[in-house]
Image (tube, rainbow, N blue to C red; front, side, top):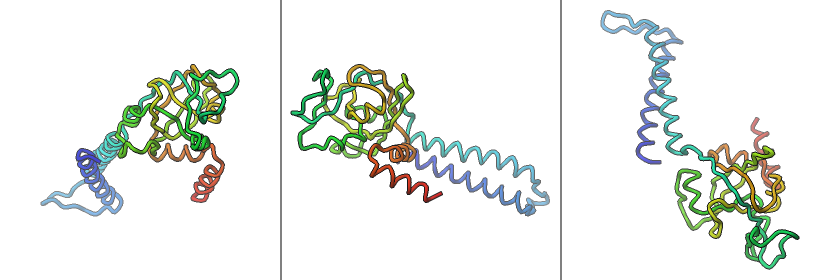
Length: 220
């Protein structure tokens, strides 16, 4: 959190406290005497509207500073994630394959989307704290405008992927109703909390999905 965000939050909090004072006076009707003049209630209504507006506006600004606006980007080519030394599906050329190491678990990538590492800043408008970690908390919403299907996957920075490309497993491709090669997909970053909730609620692994739904339902 930078200094601008801190000061915006401090100012917003001050206006919020003043708004609460106006509310308390309107509810209790406590008389306020300024010299020989009693402060009328309509002054508190005006003050409540003004300070309440400033409170919400300043806090909204802080959220924009932290999260930024999410850019919608296009993906025009999908590579199918496959272990190396594993023959590709019949009719799928090697140009449409992204090979991972034999010791890497293919299912580990079922909830991820492989993207160019430099896309992270452009998608989320923030830098990764540790560039050594490829998988971060950033959640990507993937949209197929043709059939209106959408899925949520975790960002995974991967060299060897071009700017307009992405890597997905067969499971993710089936959910989107696409095949490897030329596609028309749209991606955008999600808010930290909301994106994580959608990601867990619709997670491709039932071991993750079911406990997440139980935890949410149990809080209702």
